[in-house]
Image 1: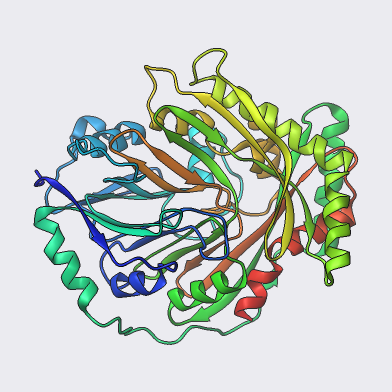
Image 2 (image 1 turned 135 degrees about the vertical axis):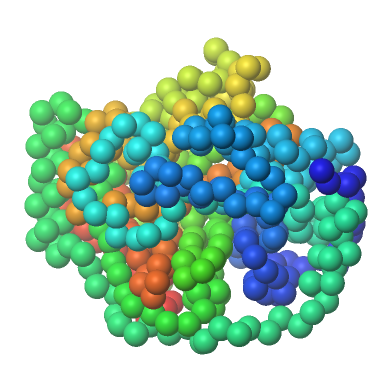
Length: 452
């Protein structure tokens, strides 16, 4: 279907934004952004003009769009099979390369897709009209490798000249300048949040759960170009698992610091975040807050609970005895917060695929609580709306069996002139309502401030 894949060197830049701006107006343009030069990520991946697009709508119906491919009718209703079929339409790359993506799926899977897959019905409205998932099948990309300081165009020979032509065109924008037309408004008052916090504590005392990730939503009206909004957000808080994608009057602007699942050569890794403190206003205060987080028994217990949950999730699809925890509760610092981050690894079982791994572990345990299904039922009871892309995942699945996905926290969802952003945190038995409420604000104040 496609011609032979080629890898062509391009001029390296530590910042992918100018390159993406040249492609911003192309159909299906996507950016997976490592936040360089200030964040710790390695690769940026850029593409556009997918061969096909798969959307799962809120009613469960799928929309498959392609000028070249026709989805078999037998796959109707089975999203995992549909994604696998799409991957199989690209020839597996037969050239040796350490680059993470040589063609495959790029897009997002929403939290509510995971809720539906686990048969957890929602009693609350869907506040956006975004699809539950939106994935493109991309046969080319530009990759920046910041560790090696190289840039590459990976494309079939029939695509290469077209992409180079797109890059040579000046990056003019027909879009209106971005601006908020209202301030961000909280869906819950502090009293409303505290009421829900108290309900979580009752569930914990009753033994229903050990931890619940409770979130609140903020909304504002806007007009203009969502890409300009992303540039402001990225400047305020660059993170290693960021991403931007926009279509029609909708967009996802994610500044996530958290990896969900990576799979390379069968090695599986997840990096749960649990435990947060704001950055200090002085170096001395900043060090004190970081040390306070590192010494917090409560935050460490919260992190370890999720590590155990993820060990169980990965154990369902990894080789027996392969699960290990090489990093437990290590401090990582970002422009607005300190976090405790752990690492859980395993070896993917031979008969399992990255897609089956994603399905088995989705949505990530760090944004549900434990045990997962009961936690998600309680979240739906207490949060007044569905979560949309928030707490889902952005990322890619490569034709060779590589995958890397984020947890879509610190994520704004744009829908028909309205921006939605959520802030949340894990609640355990010794959590305090006022501290947890403040933590939800600490996590998103830089994002809201960058736009206001």
